[in-house]
Length: 75
Image 1 (cartoon, rainbow, N blue to C red):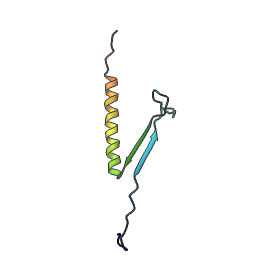
Image 2: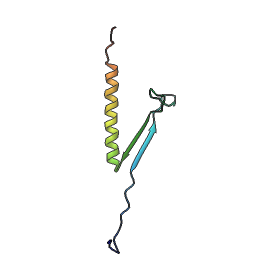
Image 3: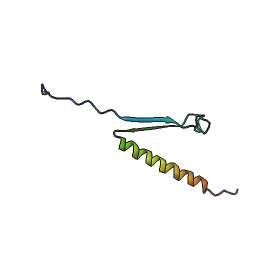
Image 4: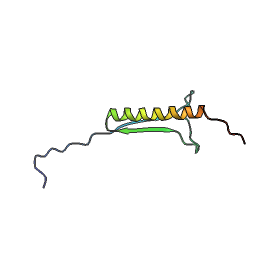
């Protein structure tokens, strides 16, 4: 049985950051299926969101440099 004067804490709301990727003209970028590319970050604290953004930025930079340094394949 619950205490008559027990304090129930409300769950902390999640921090949600969502945005659609666009080109230089503001047009939405689409994936191979024609669906818009969207980033959705969810975290409990601002620090968690910052860490996720940092990780994503590193991954994008690595992919960009892999694409720059790609060697052509002769067939």
